[in-house]
Length: 287
Length: 282
Image (cartoon, rainbow over all chains, first blue to last red; front, side, top):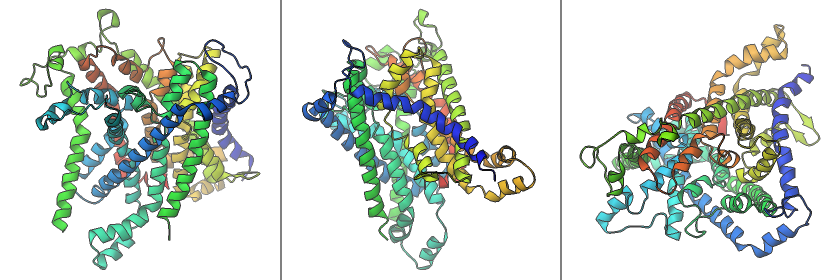
């Protein structure tokens, strides 16, 4: 084969992507070393001042980061458990299999912000159906205005929205598993629980790791939902890193500082996702 | 033991089904309510709890001058941006994916897998990191608040997905078919267009569906990079969610916006059941 052809196939896509991305990334790094804000827009050079401020004098950024970690890890674990359960249930023959498969996929096809607007009315404290039904039991949780409960509201909405994606990946995995190990287990007369623990789960381990990492990557961007549902409030109790950077950068126009935060955030994301991927691979692929 | 398992299984499926359907049902009933039946206490069943009317749906097609919401233009904007960006991403992504699947690349320590990883890893990039430079960059070339600017940004969002699905798909298409075509006298481009592509239609459809989903549901970039000239559907609908919220038109517009993608759910399920998605995540 003529080796030149391969570049004609690869390069258009690669160069378009690099072309679109390279300047923004270089620009973010350069911007993070400047004091660009609304009074003083321009690429002056102030050294590492922004980073020093970020690491020594901005607890709000770190709080938002830990909150994001909590929210994304919790939602992904819930999504994994529920998604795996659902996928396992509609994997083999049950009645209306295809109906349930479609139904369980639907939420991920809906625009998160738009559904969040609906969820806002759903969880409305006096006019929403949830509190109306809960009033039978005499409780009326403040779904959107209590600092603790609001976090769980965000989690509920995220689980509703993105469990289908986990379900899709895991069901695709289950459908691609080889048949022989299951036949062997059936011949040995293994119970469903043992079959799951010793056959299905180990076979699904590589797919599980892939699915969890993909979802963690997406979950680490949580921001739309928070913006519409609570606007980060009450106070800053549901504010995630992206949302805080958004406020600083595109609301208060502290572009330089926001750039230093977003660059730090990106580096932390890459490092922590790499570590999580390594740890998961060790845990689940022991043998 | 087995009976308990089956009972739990159906119980769980029913609970989850209710959870999935609840917001849609709520939106559907709310879209037929008027001011009184929203603000006078919670109402559920049409004709029993409240008198349904079509006001929420009618304002969607009225022009803003007559007190309407006019979601038609944003609807077509969204459709146009999503489809254009998906198409460009699929074309470029498929070409790159084909190269990565069939040829070996080596430049220093960079090999095929590293290039594939580079493509896919763009999904790790938090949108906020790109939004600030894009905002300043697009405003300096006067593409802020334009469809072109958004399409450029969406290509970054969608091409990784296209490459991810297509590399995997091409790996499953036997190499023999391109080799046979080459022996028969096709050049590599003809072999790709006439032999490999027609055999990859399921993969292309799946990749296309995912690009359309992730393009259609994006809010963040549309929200930051457009203002008044160009409005996309999600931004328009979220803007309704301001001071005094008209729940009825909000619900109606939400339903209109999620409707087209329900069809996508059917297509994805079909390809899923046929096993065409299976390799995609290994």
